[in-house]
Length: 261
Image (cartoon, rainbow, N blue to C red; front, side):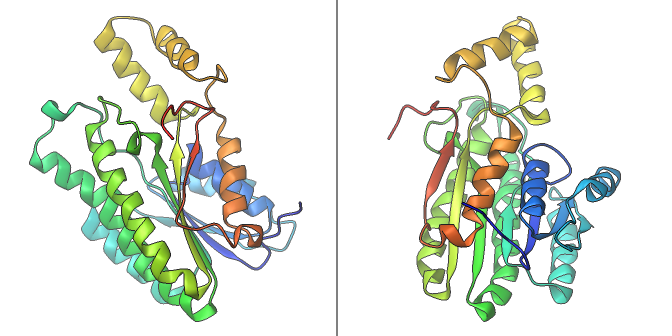
């Protein structure tokens, strides 16, 4: 199967590193014009230079801070005043780790702005152009914790669950317009986010970081954590014409880690 995204415009959140970077690279390899979106301008400049342009694509970047909703709203609204996209990858940095008893109402409000309001706003802005074209792909980077909550990620568990239920509702409403809406439930991947969480776990459990990683790998049936490039392959398929009949789904990519149906 040859996936071609030639002529498609993609906007990829959190794309200066990790999973977002891997998604951007694979979309570009498949022919899409990619707009990177993240905080770190220098990393995005460097990545732009790496992205595939063999199919005549033009890539760009947008500097945003997802943790400042007011500033983000202005930046993303201005972007859509001048641009339209065919493929939207909703992805931001995760909120701070911690259990339910460690978080207060203010923490949940910040996480809501970061993970939910930014996703809904960006999607609303993207939908106008998608509905005019009668074609679009909306893909949300979520987590396996919406099915099996991780007690040390109370904020992420709670708000990402809201995102996937909202996405299911949206998928029904826009299916007639040729637009698909899917969420990917992320397992353990080799990213800076996992590395940072593992450092905190090691400190809390008073064990080495390597032991934390080893324990994590042991939980996964495949006995390893995922490679970001593998995430990019799934996302690119969901963004393609070949996935036109897949919508309203929550697809785990976790090496078999989830035990629930």
